[in-house]
Image 1 (spheres, helix red, strand yellow):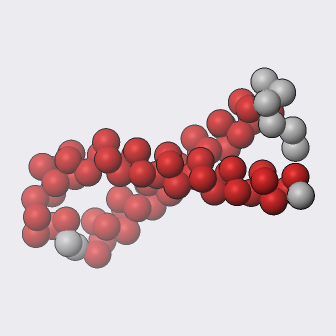
Image 2 (cartoon, rainbow, N blue to C red; image 1 turned 180 degrees about the vertical axis):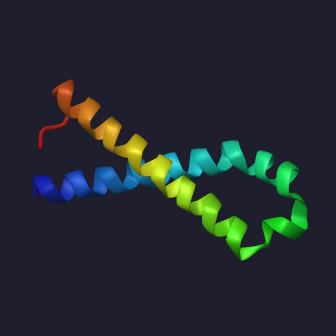
Image 3 (cartoon, helix red, strand yellow; image 1 turned 45 degrees about the horizontal axis):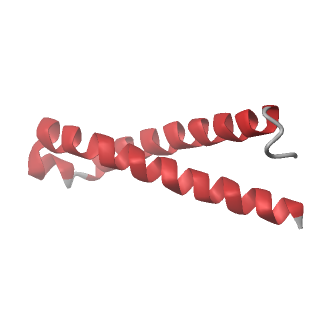
Length: 74
């Protein structure tokens, strides 16, 4: 039961961090690459690769921070 909760919390944290990352960086991406290049597959792959890396890193850091603070135990 506790592992299910951990995975659900990790998934929710990951989606939340990814959403906020997208909200913060989407305007910068639109200004820098314009509308035409934004639709480019290569630009999208690099953007989402970076987004997944940043979101995963922040999610892992938050999980370990919650574990260190004895709020979450795993």
